[in-house]
Length: 168
Image (cartoon, rainbow, N blue to C red; front, side, top):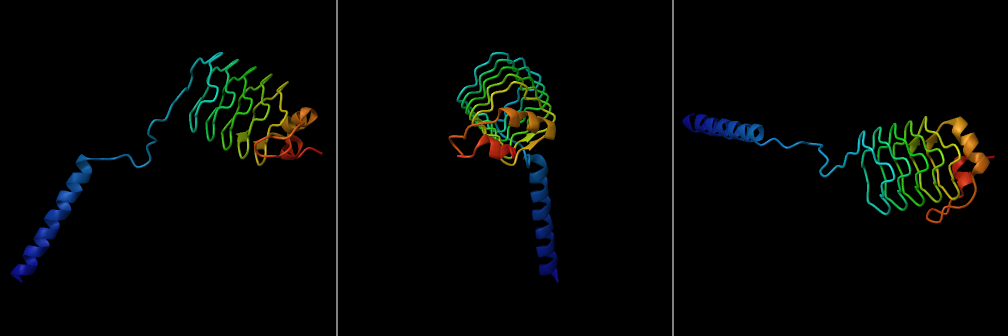
C-alpha cells in the first residue's frame, strides 16, 4: 500500500511539473513566422517584381502603378486594395484573396489567378491576355466584361483565358 501511494504521489508530482512547464513556456500554436504585413500602406509605384510574396497581406493598401511583374503572390491577401495601372504581368496569384480591389487599367497579361477569390473587384480596361482564371470566384458582371477582351493562352498553365473564364 505504501509503494502504491509513493508511486501515485510521484506521478502527481511529475504531472504538476509538466503542467508548470507548459504554463511558463507557452508556444503559439498557429503563429506564422516571418509574415509580412503591408496593411494600409502607401506603396504607389513600388517595385515588387520577381519577389516571393507568398501569404503576404496588402489589406487596404494603395498600390497605384506598383510593379508585381513575375511576383509570387500565392495565397496573398489583397482586400480593399487599389491597383490602378499596376503591372501584374506573369504574377502568380493562385489561391489569393483579391476582394474589393480596383484593378482598372492593370496589366494582368499571363497572370495566374487559379482558385483565387476576386469578388467585388473591378477590372475595367485591364489587359487580360493569357491570364488564367481557372476555378477563380469572380462576379458574373465582371466575367462578362472580361470575356469581351479575353484572348491568349497562359504560357505556364497552357489554359486559354477565354476557357478559364467560361466565355461563350
